[in-house]
Image (cartoon, rainbow, N blue to C red; front, top):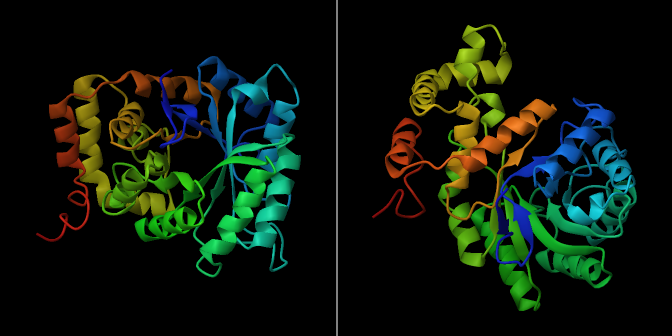
Length: 324
């Protein structure tokens, strides 16, 4: 496994990040523990979760599963860079949501308790809170850092402008600011190349792509549906209809180079400047083991150009993408 620094920080993380959103709703606790053990064996030391994962209000099901895994010892906690998030509603009461100083304090303490740890490596804002001043957010974050409860801070689903606002406020306050941004980014969703990626590169934030295979569409969906291995409904079915021509060309290209579409989709992200590592969300050990292949694929310049022809992005960073 290759490692890289998380943004401009000195923290070393694996080029693949283990996403845990399936732990609880889709994957049993026993299987989740096996997947995390296997991830460490493979050298994956970067795990991502959130207080709302598990989707039972106020329970933090997924964090609890990870906490019981940490409690098993064997240096599991010491080897793991754990990232979690706050913002989503944890109850029906108005102050158990968003990024007020109150919610930051209480949400952090609750996550620490569920994770059975005394510190969080990377604490992330799950979404932008337009109603809370950045000064209030950063003051609350700085208290957490002074208390030793959080080492680094990150954002998620923030626009380039929000990243700039956050970083400039932190700088004015003499604080370190953000070290990462977690955004949806894949071959079908490349809008972040306009503003978010340039902002992250300018401020030294590592980019952590979520949904790197766009809900499975980039994982060989056409072959799978034709073989009856997968059935799609709703938005996924509509998306396949919209992108069928490009997806078929992509799967043909992957056949030409002798690689699976899912592995190529992850590998493409690893070739993008500023990307720390995509979040993989395996439901099984087999899916986890297969993802490792992506770190070994080295796409040539002509192959990268071919992928760009199939899935053209927005044209590069703004404003050149749309103006002279």
